[in-house]
Image (cartoon, rainbow, N blue to C red; front, side, top):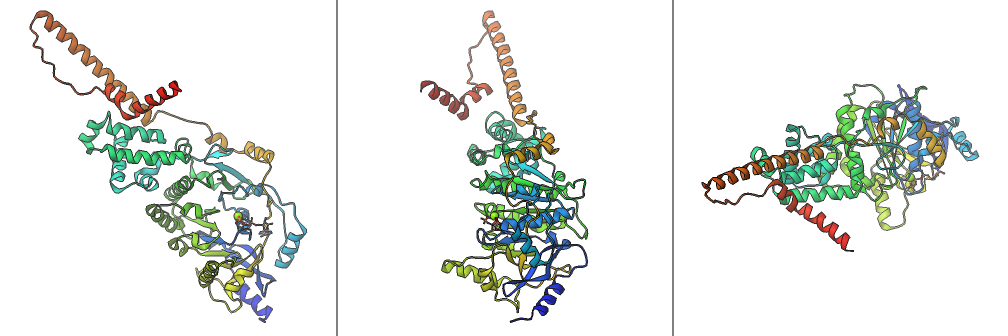
Length: 510
Ligand SMILES: Nc1ncnc2c1ncn2[C@@H]1O[C@H](COP(=O)(O)OP(=O)(O)OP(=O)(O)O)[C@@H](O)[C@H]1O
Ligand SMILES: [Mg+2]
C-alpha cells in the first residue's frame, strides 16, 4: 500500500501552477480521495484541447458542466454543443444535496451553489438565438468539402462563386446557390461559357443533388441572413463572468451532415475572425462538443482533413476544443494526438472487444507507480475519472484518478417557463431572429432573365414589323431561318419547369 503523504506530495507537486488554474477535484489513492490533493488545470494550457470520455452514465456531461462553470467564473466565455438538451440547468443554482456536501468534504473544497450567465442558441426553428451563415461566407472550398463533391465539380463551384462575385450577385442561401447552378446550364450558359468555360449539365446536376441532400437535413434553415457574428460568443456579464453559450442540438442527432457542416463553418469563421493570440496565459473561448462522435460520423475524408487542420490551427487563436464521447476511438487519431487534457471516466468490460479497447486506452496514458491503469479504468465510480493534463511548461502532469467536484448549478434541465424567461432577457434574440431575405442571386438572376426575355420579345416584334412592311411592299424574300430557342422557351422547356408542371397536373388529377 502506497504512502498517502507521498501520494499527496506527488499530486501537489505535479499540479502546482504559477498562474491561475481551475480545480477539478482531488486525487484518489486505492479508491479513496486524498483530501486537498487537488488536481488543478492551468488556464494557460486550456487552449491545448481535450477529451472527456467514458461509458454511458459515468459523468461525462457533468464533467463538461464543471469545466464550463469554472471557466465562466474566471471570465472565460464558453460554447457548448448540447446534443441531449441536458445542460440548460447551468442558468440556475444547484439546490444542493447531502451527497454533494459529502463529495466536497472528501475533496477539501467548499460547495457553493451558483448560477451562470447563459445564452441559448439554435440551428433550427427551436427557441433560441438563430445561428446562420451565408453561402458566400463559406467560400467555394469549404462548400465543396461539405457537399463532398468531386474535383471537377469543385472546380465548377469555384467558377460560379467567381461569376457571382464579378457580377455582384450575393449568394446568401441555398436558394441562391441552386439558382446560379441552374442558370449556368440554361439561360446563362452561353454567357458563362464565353468568359469562364463550359459547365456540363451532368456536373451541375450532381452538385444540385448534393445540395438537396443537405437541404433535406435542414441546411436551408442554417444558410442565410442574418449571419452570426462570432464576436457575440465572447461576451462577459456585468459581474465579470464569461457567458455560457448553449447550442441546443437535440433535433440534430439523426442529421450528422448538418452538424458537421455547422461545426466546420463555425470553427472556420472563428479561425478567420479571431486575432492571433500571444502568450496571454488564458483562453479566449472554450468550445465543448458533447456526443462528438456525431461530427466524425459520415464525414468524408476531405471534411476530416479540414477538421484536423482547423483543430491544429485554432489553438493559436486562443480557442480550446473539447470533445466529449463514449469511446476515445470515436475521435480520429490525428485529432486525438493533439489533445492536452484527457479526462477518462470508467469504461465497461462486457466483451472481448471492450477489453481490448480498455488495454489500448490504458496504454495511451502516462505510466504511474500508483495505478494499474487498465484496472482503474473499469473500477472508477460515477463522477470519478483518470486525469492527465499539461502543466504550464507543456509537460504532461502525473496521472491522477480524480474524485471530481460537483456542478455548482443545477444538474437537471430548465422547465419551459424558465427557458422562456431566459430567452426574454436575451439581447441577441432581438439582433438575430428577424427573417431577412434581401435581394440576392436568386432574385437578381430572375430579373436578368426577365429583362433578356423582354428585349428578345421587343426585337422579335420589331423584326416582324419590318417583315410585314417588306411583304406589303412585295419585296420580301421568304427565308425562314430556323432560330434558336428563346430564353422563355428555354425556361418553359427546362426539366425543372416540366417537372413542376407535371407535379401540379398530378395533384390536380388526384
Ligand atoms: N461530478 C459529479 N458530481 C455529482 N454527481 C455526478 C457527477 N458526475 C456525475 N454525477 C451523477 O451521475 C449522473 C450521470 O452523469 P452524466 O449525465 O454526466 O453521465 P454521462 O456520462 O454524460 O452519460 P451519457 O453517456 O448517458 O450521456 C448525473 O445525473 C449525476 O447524478
Ligand atoms: Mg452525457
